[in-house]
Structures are given as C-alpha cells and as structure tokens.
Length: 112
Image (cartoon, rainbow, N blue to C red; front, side):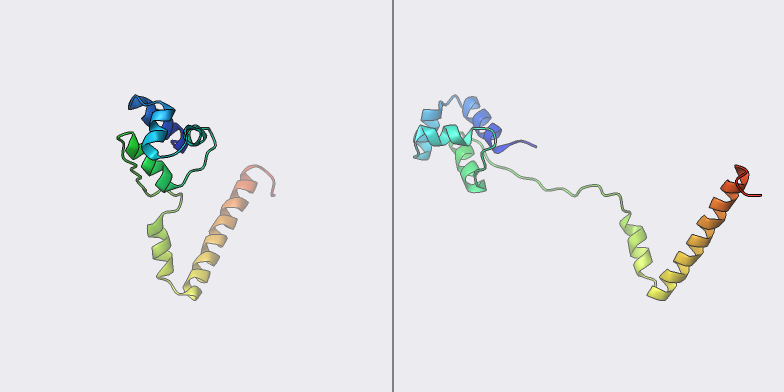
C-alpha cells in the first residue's frame, strides 16, 4: 500500500518541483510540504488530492473485494435450512467425524 507521504514526494519529484514550489502552488509554507512528505504523516484525503493535483497527478482509489476463506455459496445453502434442520445436519456431521476419529485411533492401536 502506497503511503500518502511517499505519493506526494514521488509526484512532486516527477513534476520537477521543489518543496518550496509545491508549497507556493498550494498556498502554504514549505514546512507544510516537508511535514506532508515525512513518513508517518497522516493528511486528509482532500490534502493529498490537492497536493497531487498541484503536481499534475490525480488521486485515484480502487476498492476491491478481498478473497475470504469462507465460501459464500455454502453459507447461503446452509441459511436455506431451518434452525432445526441445521442442528440435525450438525449432529450427523459430528457423528461422522467421531466415527472417523475412532477408526483412526483403532488403526493406531489405541483402542482394542
């Protein structure tokens, strides 16, 4: 993720501007630009947008869905069941897992 300070500094340098030149375009003291470019600075979106615009750049943000570990189709399918049906399904799944665990224990000689 690109930091605001890095974006502003890189845009200013790409435009061939000094901190003083950018400050002049923004109508602020040079120290404000230096502070914006300092790592950890936390300017508002509006401030970043204005600084980039003064450098001939446009602030562009894209939001995209993250890839989750949950399959939404499985969740939707489960939600079509009534709570009672979900409990019965859970009980069957628990019995299957218990049977599998017992078979594994038998194969390791843990159960006689």
